[in-house]
Amino acid sequence: MIKLLGISAAIIFILNAVSIGGYPQVSWETYAQSNSTVETKKEPVVANTTQEQQATIIVTKIVRCDSSLGIPSDDSVCQFVLENVDPNQFDLIVTGNNPNMTSFQGSANGTYISMDPGNYTVSESLFDTMDIENQLGETAIVTISTDSNGDCSSQFNQVDTFQESKGTISNNELQSCEIINTIDVSQGASPEAP
Image 1: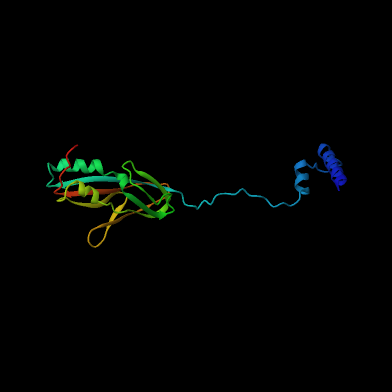
Image 2: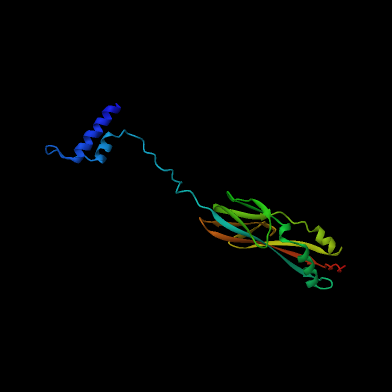
């Protein structure tokens, strides 16, 4: 078989070099095409072009204070509150299409969450106000109201309590969702500096 291929190659070479008796010349390309075995072509693996691309949401935690009847002043009560309550004390939860993180600590600088396009929600674990309430005195009443801002919209229950924030994001889109907690203090007394 090998001898036969060698002889065939030599004849083709001669025919390629010289035209014999008016017969057309055969090129190496023609020889290769006519003598190649049938092989299954291996197509390159191409990523699914219909696959959805990632989108990004920047989730920011903002803490504010509102005081009434504060001692010695509302400003001093809120200054104390904001020095002792940090955004990272709030745990946030994101649900959606394959988010890279589902639970994380709040950040005033924002946390980047990548996910597949579609609907998403941002919610939070309740913050325990008992410690700050104890520090502001036995007459202090501390509550937290929550809202959201940006590309997400707040959802409230029947008694107007924040439940979650909802949004919808598309391919390669960058959105922001701020979760805002306002710590409301009534009749708090700012502890004296040591």
